[in-house]
Figure: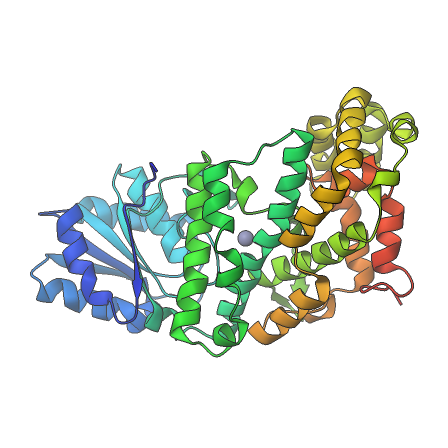
Length: 437
Ligand SMILES: [Zn+2]
């Protein structure tokens, strides 16, 4: 496997491994321990002490602001430090510190070491950094993953429970996104990348199997959670930067909420919590889909009813009219739409393979009630109200979700098979698990 990350160490009380790894990969270089006020206390100080004890020349750069974002001013400050010290960054912190270090190291053609302090996102190992550029716009810059990750479960498990619960929600999203990948694979639009699948799916159930441990900050459970999140990022890298292996429709609810600046009681909702609600919704969709018998679909009738590209573009323009990015749906459906011949071929495959294919999907996706119970135990949200939304909001957003990304998802299968309205009714209608009251 050719990835930028050369060492992923995890275990309890392992910060003393940093100097040895530093010397192995960066002999003769100087270390710049990069942290914020909190992460300095949590682990930065100890990392600095271990480096100094081992005789590694080291300095520090600590962001002292109480609240901070990956703003351009920090990129410039970090540039100055890296140039003056000519050192290797040792990023001790959460997503923002890691993204700034990833970007800073990449700008200087260098590598960096990551010492994560919370298991809340899967971005640590990814090859991209989310930075607010000079204009203040959030941009995902292509960089390089950290060359070394030292994940100390004692440090990670000391983070507030709701941050780990957010990580749990983000990791759980690989359940439904895997199933949606199976659909796109069947349709032939995006084939399953075996190595990325194996990295992100093989041990997923195990890694999600201890929600109580996540809620209680059990180091072993948090270690498993972090490992799952780290493998997600590596999966993206082995598939050439393609995020198909870690996200699909469930993440689009989060994209929608981000783009519309959603708040709950005046506070932003974490990525993982938004994704968790997306994931529960997807589990409900799959339950409804798997309760139907698609060997009975009338392929020719569905092909006949299939809209033209122009009709779909008009539908998207109308729906997204007051959305912050009004052309988004139009652009994505233009890329996603396929002609009648492709629809016929895909529906025939679905109809013919449904007995086996539906079983494979059932094996992949957890039932809604099961996922909900796991989230409750992990401390993740279990209903839209927990993040300031209603079932009606989720239903409304679902029309956007179907159109806002070119990737094939379960809703596209439903549209093709003429069961979209029935599916929505099963979930949001009377007696549905997300019934709109
Ligand atoms: Zn995510």
